[in-house]
Length: 87
Image 1 (cartoon, rainbow, N blue to C red):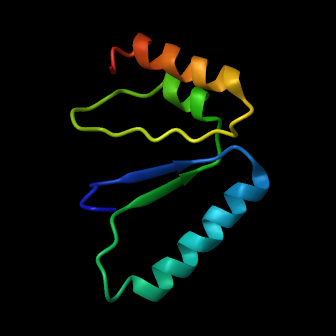
Image 2: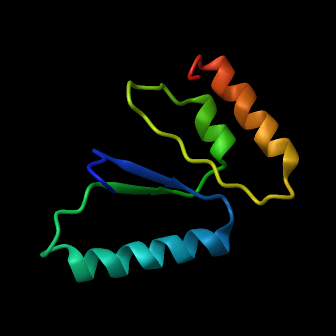
C-alpha cells in the first residue's frame, strides 16, 4: 500500500489467516491487471517469533495489532523493538 516495496501479513490464528489468504486471492484476481500490486507475503506465524529473526531496514514500518486484552504481547513487542535497536 502507498508505495511499499513489500508487505508481510503475519497471523498465527488459523481462522484469521484463512480470511487474509482468501481476501488476498480475491483482490489479486480483481485488481491484478488494473493496478500493479506490491508483493504481499502471507505468513502463518507468531509475530514475536518472526520479529526475533527480523533484520530492520531503513524506513521499515511495523504495524502491530494484537487482541487488546493480550497486554503481555504489547510489552514483549516493545522489548523486541528495543533489542533490535529499532526505536
